[in-house]
Image 1 (cartoon, helix red, strand yellow):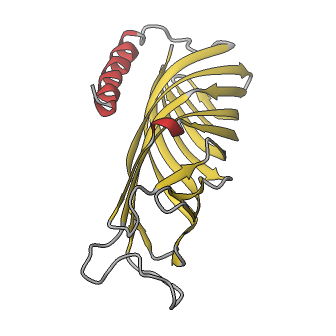
Image 2 (tube, rainbow, N blue to C red):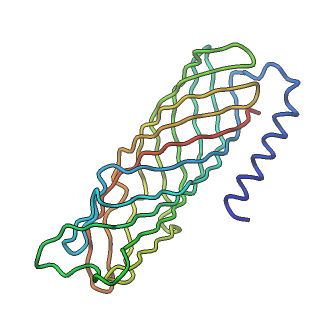
Length: 238
């Protein structure tokens, strides 16, 4: 079953569990656990690729496809405050199209006039672990609304990513991704009975890559970018 199919199946299960749990009115305890599914998209800051002297920066078209996530979480409550941590297992998909270049006159072009525009497709799998401090500024059963913030570490499974460089001069290009990235997360949470909805924005604090390797030519090219993540999730508190 594909990752998208798993998300749809878990959504149906969460809705069923939530309906079955409506009879229990007091869902706030000292410690809560739950499960969320979500969707996210990335935007990049200071995107900069340099391959054989050709600079690809703000001219890059980014067409990021929607990513998916499954997230078990634990929340520790103290009055209106709470601390929450998660283990967010996610799949992200990215697409870059290099439509313009700035180069040195002596450099060899990356592609001829008759060739197609260079493209780069990337799919990654990762676990994201935040440590969040939240505050419930609305508490009126069955409704709760909160804001939360805190640091997040993203562990990228670099051995399982999928990369596809197309229409470049060099074959077998591969981007060296950083295995650990850091973010600062801010978000708004809404709880209705046992259902929870989170709107989250993550600010990227790390460079996503070390460079681009061309093993056949024994060369390494520049790759620099940091990403911001916008996500939405729905879940249930057990």
